[in-house]
Amino acid sequence: MIHQNSELPYEFREHDSKANVVWNRTSVTQAMREQLNGHAGKCMWFTGFSGAGKSSLANALEVELNRRGYHTMLLDGDNIRHGLCRDLGMSEADRAENIRRVGGVARLFAEAGIIVITAFISPFRADRDATRELFAAGDFIEVHVDTPLDVCERRDPKGLYQKAREGKIKDFTGINSPYEVPKAAEVTVNTDELGQQEIISRLLKEL
Image 1 (cartoon, rainbow, N blue to C red):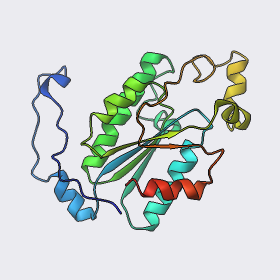
Image 2: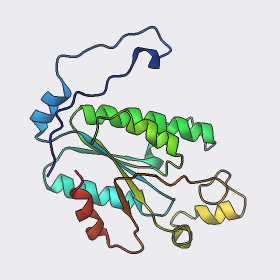
Image 3: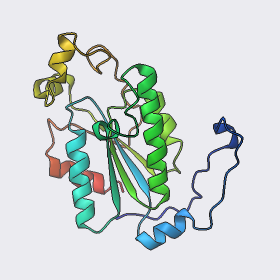
Image 4: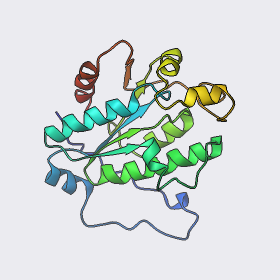
């Protein structure tokens, strides 16, 4: 099910860093780690409105992969903001930086030969595309959880839409901040129309 990728791993260009540093080539390669793990390192990136079902799908996918013996790591938007990105707010600039950091971490996990699953609203197309560029062809799988906004707002599991409508939350995606739909997501699903197991079965075929 999980295919090995023979392409060389991405290497950051020297001018990507403001520091005067050069790339340090390690002796253990991504291919060697993947051989040890028995599968390729990849990133499955869930994007969509709050309440669309991203976190539930990401968790269910990891459970199934774990059951099948694959090495995984789940990066969840809320959890990341308790640690790595706790210094960031919700402005467009901070949201872009949030995704930049997460993309870098996801790339490191993939380089370790791990299947990394992320669940982030990640509303801006440029940020998602920049993350995709960190990965070799086929190693970044964008999943647009295209659950309609009215359904997500009706669910409102965290009460965020109501607060946004009341003006208590600024820059809330779908209410007072835009969501840019992916132009070429590998997978598009709607949790209002499809059951979780049906979606998970479809996602497994993409890995």
